[in-house]
Length: 472
Length: 127
Image (cartoon, rainbow over all chains, first blue to last red; front, side, top):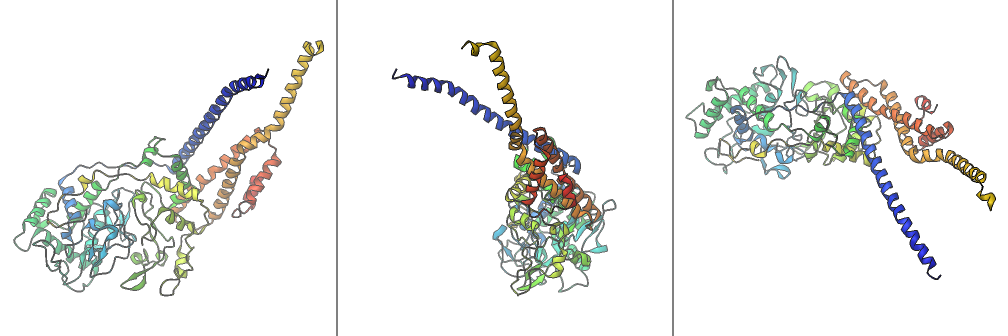
């Protein structure tokens, strides 16, 4: 009799255990089913969005290494193309920093070191803007280059391009990327350097202590005449047209002859240099399909649930896709998002008026080109002045572009003057409520735009013809 | 004791139990529906109201044609939440949640969103 309650309890437990077990399994199955249902709802919503925007996976052209690509690769990495033989394209476009240099404002001529550690040792001022990445710039959607579009496609069928050379731009450039690739060669604080400057005595022979022969006078009658002169001088330097060529110049002669067998050496022009560099960039910096492209291709498991929520926000409520449109996530148009225009150049605060400096149109003041977002997660800094160091910060600045408009600059002036405040895109001044979770979801989505290009060993050469060391 | 064991009593008791269960289930149904769907309904309703508000605000904005096309697409995507709202509204009603209760939920949801002005387009959602 004394054991009766214990026996009853044991029986109860024996009966209850399976019930509890079945109940727990049921709850787990129910929550899993709910999660799966929620995920399928997200997929269904994304299918609607894909239909509305007519989204397609990024088309990537396949290239093989040909002589023109190898020539372009050499020209891209070789510092010999710069005035003082110390800066190459790769100085500001490093694979390790998302094809930028990780600096808020790039340092070309006079820079020492690489990446975010690069600093100015002597000479010219820091370039006023951050270096842009070069991913997939051969895509047909890419219609303009640089932050202010000073190189852009005016007529793609007739291959007419805007460039600082204006109507003096020679014919024959394959695309705007080819035009773009030769512009930094003529910018004093990027690659050109100054009149009567010399290369470093630390460089190997025959490059040390050489006068900057690309710049032959203090000033030129026009930008176009300066650019023409620099290009002619550069060809003479590369091909050794004035005297007996050095072995490294013979190497370039051979590479040009292989790349353009139909041309005599005297017919080689800056157009060929531009086309070769652009061809290398097309091949070397063609990012493969990103997870988002896989998703668009039908693989619903290619991106996470959070990224799917981010995509819905990106194309919907957050209105990111209004400007970050198309396969490159840029409309390649110009907008003011309220980034402070004042920058310090040679110790003085000056305004960077963006697109206005190209067009002279008052409506373009403070406007900059929408940056493409592919591989954006690999960029250490964002915006044209590198003023945001995280995606979260950059997103929140879009949400409230005038938040810091009333602040002061070091000279006591307002951070944003009335003109700049009025220039801010009305799409951004319409208040947008994003929670922390929304921002996280957007970042997760942007992460799905990341993809790798081909193997580094295929992109970065072991050595360059000039024998100079270069930034990899 | 024989009365309690009679078939008539057992049938009556079963019918009474069944009726009580049905009554309780009917009374609890709206509560169950709200427990399952109210949170999603609230967010869908607020998102939809915001979408309508944004559509109204951007309507007269002067924009480049290409930008206008993209904006219309974004607004269309945002308004897809109104389909969710309609679906959840139907679900709540299928759980016998009354129209008055749904309106009260909507009014409460709006009251918690200071950015959401309940103007003409918003009020149409309440009807």
